[in-house]
Image 1: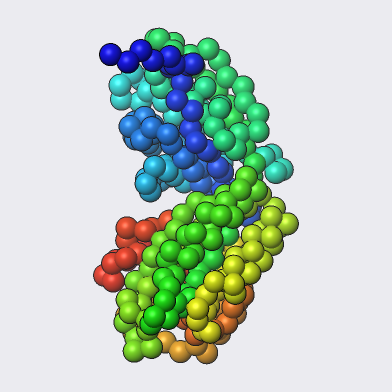
Image 2: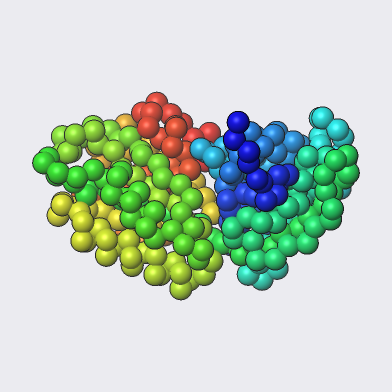
Length: 305
């Protein structure tokens, strides 16, 4: 038998909590990076009943809550609605999120989230046992930055999906948090390395300065490590990528030209950071951020775009 010592046996802190806001602060996507998926899945079920929550999704060990900002009254009930999000308030460059829960749900609503990375300040009541508890965490307000990349490899060397992930992982930091990586299957055109797949990276950035540093660093790394002269890198700074989906559907069902891609990007506010032929697939990838299981399928559709 191995005797163990636990510093705090009844607290499992989240790895991180991040709040991605739209430009008008009307909607927020709360991204919770869990250390215990079982507990996070329990929260996902119960929190989905909160009036502020519009949609919930899980990607790996991250749970995402698409929500509207504001305050609501929770009617907590043991077993069926034992925890929830009571309020989401955006105050300048901070987001205040108030959780509430019963029993173990109260522990999750307080200390487990209060001690997560990314939390600036917190305030919470005593929790555990059969008590009801409430906790507020204050996290930086972030905006979504999407980076589409394609054509970094050659017939002999490289793989775009590995290079982009390794770059993103290296640049992950408190100011620019690396949130997701999706491989996007494209129409198998003749001018391809092999599988015709592009990649979209998703970051949550706290301000323009951190965004600029992130994007310049990604471009610098691509220039350093890409083995192709046709690398494409495009950037969309927006809460969603709905306007890119029609283009993406075309790119996943037929062959498009570079000129068409550049014009479409210009029409819909997409920044071109590297303008090789890879911009065709890079632009198509943007619509599939945080959808890594759907984006690999040619027949997949985005129904909420």
